[in-house]
Amino acid sequence: MGLSAVKRGTTLDDLYRGIRRTLQFQELLLRDSVRNKAFYQAIKRSVRKGSRVLDIGTGTGIWAVTAVKLGAGEVVAIERNKFLIPVINSFINENSVAGKIKVITGDSRRVKLSGKFDLIICETIGTQAFDENIVPIMSDAVKRFLRPGGIIIPRSISIFAAPARLRWKSGGLPSGIPFKSQFFNSLVDNTPFVISRKENIEILSVPQRLIKIDLKGAKMPLKTDNLSCQWQGVNCSKVNCVVTWVVAELTNKIKIDILRRTSWLPAAYTVSAPFKGRADLEFNISLCGVKTRWTSSFKKHGKVKSQSRTSLSPVILLSG
Ligand SMILES: C[S@@+](CC[C@H](N)C(=O)[O-])C[C@H]1O[C@@H](n2cnc3c(N)ncnc32)[C@H](O)[C@@H]1O
Image (tube, rainbow, N blue to C red; front, side, top):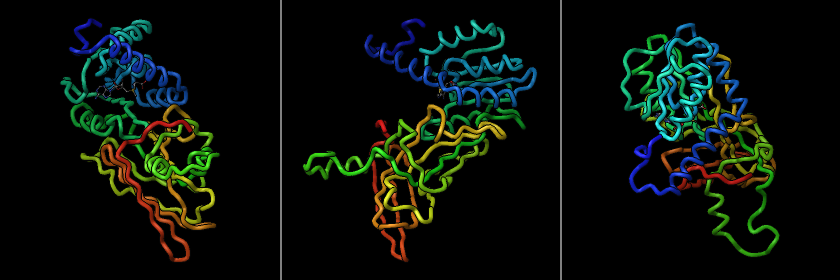
């Protein structure tokens, strides 16, 4: 990559930081064998000999190369991050598929292509489902590039939710010393966060689906406000949050459920139970841009107690 690819005003520090972040992210993806095997199997099931394939957000080029190895006749791979172009080209050359893959640098929504594709692959599944823009990207690609009857991977994205106990998150702060920190505690309680250690989550009731988006027929703008789920008989002495996570259906019978496996991480929304024993719980959430609002309503013997929380930040990363 020449230096002309770098924005004016970018310092060498910015450049190194950008490259490091990009490589670390792609490394995380390539190390995720559960994800890799699921995508490999889905592509194997969907590609035919001579298929024309479009890979949007090709990253390292992994699915473009996979498609050719599994029989595709021609692949167009689009990637908007210029730092990745030498990586993609090396990967293509190392796997001797150079003649069959055309690499395009840019945002897929601004790219013009001729002809239609039999298969479109787009792994821009965000940790919180829609935060990497998979819906508008896939909607645009389906309209402009998919042949009638063509296949897309993934075909749908859902968010599931369940009341849970995070083992490390009990009691107020600061732990072990008798000082007041109501303000800090309320900031923490009003900030949703990503759970990096899944083994710390104890799911307390059957997971329910908050939303499912069929990527072939998705309507824009995406409606992600006022999503809700209910559970009966939740253990109030244990519950301290509602956990949400993504399930991506890649193709028929091949799904990635991020709760137990893969490098994607679930999110947690703090709730506090106002009753003792067991109570019913209704959880309502609006995921709008950077603002997240959630309400937990506990109901016991006909009495309802609700609590709403609003976060001005999107989900942030804390260890857990
Ligand atoms: C999660 S990574 C996936 C990389 C690779 N496909 C894989 O599965 O290992 C998503 C990639 O898509 C790229 N991307 C996101 N939106 C894009 C768009 N609209 N057009 C082109 N590339 C895009 C990002 O720069 C990133 O490299």
